[in-house]
Length: 110
Length: 115
Image (cartoon, rainbow over all chains, first blue to last red; front, top):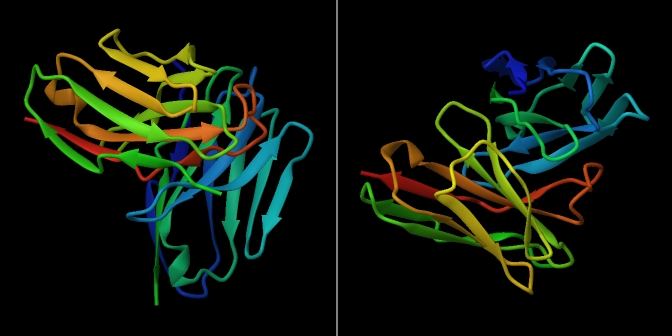
């Protein structure tokens, strides 16, 4: 059974703070890694699709890096806003299906 | 472009009963995956359907079964419900069965409570 870990489990930051969280996963035989943002009462939405060919993605204030050798990915949020409050899920793909981590729940306080 | 829709949104069943959950995939997507999310955990892969055939299965017993129809919509059936089946069930569609480089498109989920 593949174990995908995310840390921290939850965090609270003030509006304007920058923050980051970690996804660690077995590094052998994985094909790609996805990050999803899941706001309360909505469906998970794709943030980044990270392939073995690229190791950094950026979308506005949010960016992600991927270390394929050691099996970890960082998600960074610069200048957090209340609308960033959500659960962030990472999901590496191992050839047949995605294996989701438990998520990091972010609360941004105004 | 129509997104992924799931029905019903909430469901309460009694232990031992059977349940059917439904999912309409995003237009243009031929692959549907089902996930179970128990409290405090990430979504766990149940199975995937591609062009009406099961195309991969997670660590779930045979009483979890599914169907995919010619229009690529899908059903998840669970027989002999147990209390531990209480969870949020998510459906996700994607462009192709091997499209790990394409994002999953999720529905809002069905919250199943087994009493």
